[in-house]
Image (cartoon, rainbow, N blue to C red; front, side):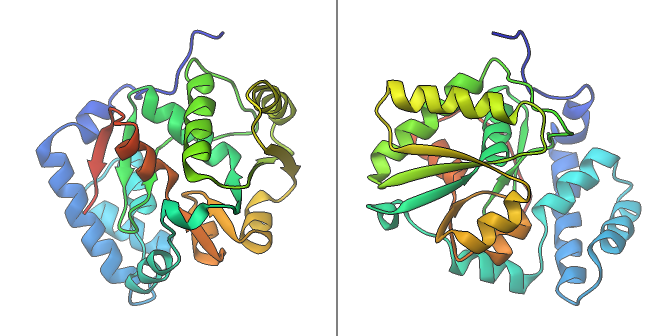
Length: 237
């Protein structure tokens, strides 16, 4: 196992660890939603609000993840399912989105709750996925959720072009076989489009997927409550 995790960046405590900074971010999210709800472009809105509040790059990244127009927030919430809705259903899970977010959460990184009730982090995959100390625990948490949900099947979807996607696919399949789980893992060239268009129920916190999918389940929110996970939470509203 690798001695690495997805914890905080140096300087994150200064950006997100004080009441003063969180109050500033909440004000920024309110202003951002005001602009987005009046059809201002996202990047221009983030630049304007970021300059006004003198936000640093990572604060602007958190601001963009947490913000959405009033119409988009309503649309996302109208499609959100309860755990009871998953019984006997097939669930499609946005592999790297869920894996990296939960790895970050378990590593003590700051996690941001946005206006849509979704949780997001500041990590990402930049061409290569590297397994970390918390990867196995994440797979176990997904397995516990799957069994409690009484869903029929769970299909993990990963980005085919990302290096090591084949390796994580094999790790998950091996775990599923060992634990007699009805799981499958698929590699897609355009996973976001695939998830939005081909699945009845999606697990993701990716904003674009949430906007275009049929229905979605807030797995991170569920696990935080159900498993009583410790979380470095920044509530952005």
